[in-house]
Image 1 (cartoon, rainbow, N blue to C red):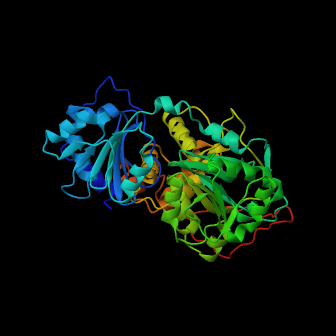
Image 2 (image 1 turned 120 degrees about the horizontal axis):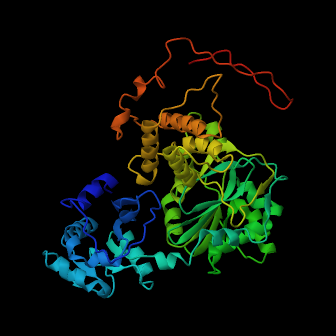
Image 3 (image 1 turned 180 degrees about the horizontal axis):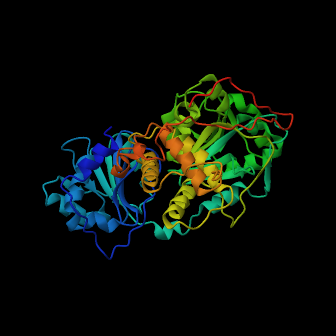
Length: 503
């Protein structure tokens, strides 16, 4: 499969400007997953045309159906059907709702014809986004190598859907998530997807349970498989499975090793089937990811409408694999990263976790990063208490996710490089200390995370080519003095010297 950068070049070949119809009010496209990338972005940073791949096929999405029948966009439309078609010479099918597009393509020598249904013989199918009856056929068409050119605006439909409704359904009748008697230390979850949201938080905004939408499906993740067995979580487990099922009343499959979960669900009237693996007729699959096998199958299961209930911790894997980032290599994260939820090696203390309340903002990595960018630009403003202290380590964790040729992740790298190039790093001294929960502390944490990610700080932002000659980053010419408070107050933990310090 071509890289996003190569695909972008093919799509934009010869296109020097955009002349879109002014009377067509587009919607903003939300890029989800690791394969999608922006093609057209307006001056407000909103994506209006995007592309991606699925299975063996490709798709191009336009934010209004009128863009597909606009003669002035002919150069791009020709590039799009050319890039989408994996079988040279195969005809292009156009749904009757876009009949003018067939004439545009035919006028440029492309073999295009109006087809009311997608067919296997077609190389590309063009359709608006309002036909619900062909969804399954279009997905199958792409998985087998077909190309899909689709356009539509969803602002009216989007007004009828809200993630807060998902959260309310998942947390119906639940005021807290109590795992204090579980004798487990769950992993902290990093919630970074645009359609991902936390469900259980500690007092420092550490997340133990989160959920997300992905494609037509849904995902719920817990920071430890033991949470599937906690009796006090019974009401939540029932809510979660029902939400994942989406009203289908379909088959609920529970991995053999998690049979205790079946008992808890049975108490609430939910029948389950205990199986060693995902079955083809499953509506919801509850399991612990322990290997890389079947990751693509599971991701497609969710994208096409399935529900995934995942329980896993990564701190033990990190202990057994020193020097390897679990954000990059832990089997659970190979599956979950595209969903916008990742399992970190940081553990959380067992205890009651608060649940988000309706109407009250909740910490989210991406939104807090966006607010931080605005504050740095305006030199004023603030975010909720504790959010900036959380932003630094979360940013460092996020930057461990492999980002090469994945626009959804690379965009964060670019944002941080721009911030570092525009604003000087603070210098911490005895007279001017840097605390975590402030912009200066977040800046230092994010800069450290960016450096550790292997990102080349001199690329893409020319202004920082000489960054390391700055007195703010130049290695000190005098010895570095580090003061450590090792008075060891308390009895539970103590500080012990390693015997050496390397600067």
